[in-house]
Image 1 (tube, rainbow, N blue to C red):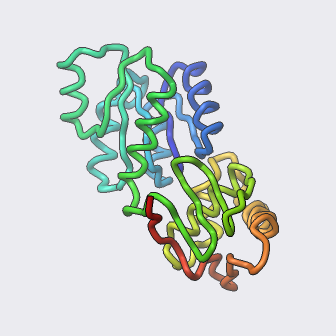
Image 2: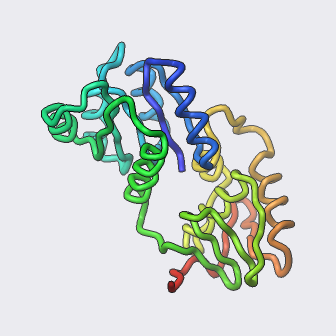
Length: 226
């Protein structure tokens, strides 16, 4: 999932970004409202973690802009004030969630994951294709019942492909959904990651290359029982 943190306290923004990246998320950072607005305009984020008190464009205005754009992006507001009145005001602006500072990082992760699920079409709790299973919540992958150890990027690519339900996913979309703004769009990053992913998943091959278009897993995802 792709996350944008808009927070003017640089140390806090970078600490949260590092933590979310360890959770397997692609994270961009903006240190003021204007930069946040620019990034939110050109990139589709699953979730924006938005401080209300920002230099440049205020957080409240940025929240309204995101909501008015009609994007599926979800917004969680951060604020130093956690009164009921402030929460009500933040939610009335169109924010999907509200978290007062200081906050527990584990709670932020849980809220971001919950919002990200709402920003994309409903997908099954367990993604399957043949004997391959991916559990997004537990971040586990098995094939024919045997665990498959993947890097965060490999896991992210496989999750996007399975969630596409057999549709072709372009390299550009994979780069946008799994990597952050520091990824070079002119590198072979996606191709190399797919190559190593294929090796780890073994035979028979499960990821098809659609020449000139991208990649797909033909017999895409289904919900698991239990």
